Image (tube, rainbow, N blue to C red; front, top):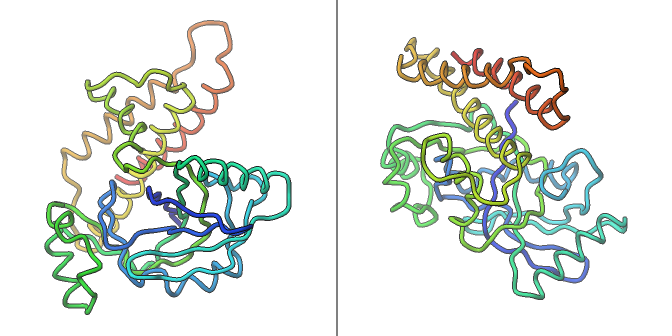
Length: 282
């Protein structure tokens, strides 16, 4: 099961002990060329209100900081309300939210969810997605048609299987300014240098996140090709092999007798897992 994270730059608000905001915006194309359709969350909301949670930054390893009390679709937004727990960590998170909002800074919400098996469709062009939406009876006024039409490859998410959590995240108001991770990836393409102050841990996190998204997409496209009896483009195979080679290079044993630090060991293990996923996607 693939778990997707979708962050938006919309701000949340704090009302007493309750945080309120849009956990997702539907009908727009995101940086992964995904379009979540209006109505996609309706069947998942009940389960979210029963079992869902609100962490900080998609951290599932600790206790949640808030519990959802309401969730509903309004226009092209998924509105979520959650009450902060009384624990120290939860109240610290609430304090950060309150202080940022009081200074006019933004607080964002980001969802963690899985798609229903029957709730995903891939279109070679954005215009085809809009035509499908129109024929299926969707309100096209809820779609950012202009941006979608410019897309040459786009994935429609029409039904969310499970909505696991809605995280508190700090994001700037301008979505383009959230792309520090993408800027760091340009270094691999001979473009901009890695931004000053970006730690190795943050850099590796950005790269691994991008590769995971790539693996998810490759697996879905492979499943579609298998159904149609089509083969993968040789050029794409070459690209995957190149990435595999880079990962193999990272996994080579150090030539020095000095042990590598714990952070590099962690990256090596994650790289091995991703390499196995890449090979499985061919």
